[in-house]
Amino acid sequence: MKKISKLFFSLFVLSLLVLPTVAVKAAAGDLSANYASDTGINNVSQTINLSQNDPITTATRIINMLMMFLGIIAVVIILIGGFKWMTAMGSEDKIKKAQQLMSAGVVGLVIILAAWGIANFVVTKLATTV
Image (cartoon, rainbow, N blue to C red):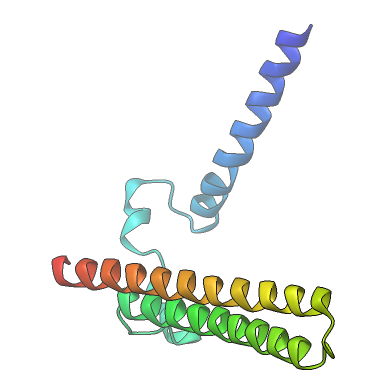
């Protein structure tokens, strides 16, 4: 019984994958192989104004913005640690926690800068090989 239900489920999923393709071809009135010649990408490009930028440039911008955001977070963590240290009023526990927070922020900043360097290197190498 389980094999039959698995078979019906597989056929159902397969029909969900195949049915949209057949429906689009039938709606276009073309069930032949000529459907691939006009996919309508020009109409879509004119309607929504797709970017003409290189994908590598777009990826570089996204990576740089993400790393800048993470760098700002790391600097804020360091500043919070410094503020906690200044307001510790000599309490050794608070000073130790503030120092740990600041060191964690510095380590995070180093990791972020290393990740940015590696990503920049990889993207540059990809751009020169493509």
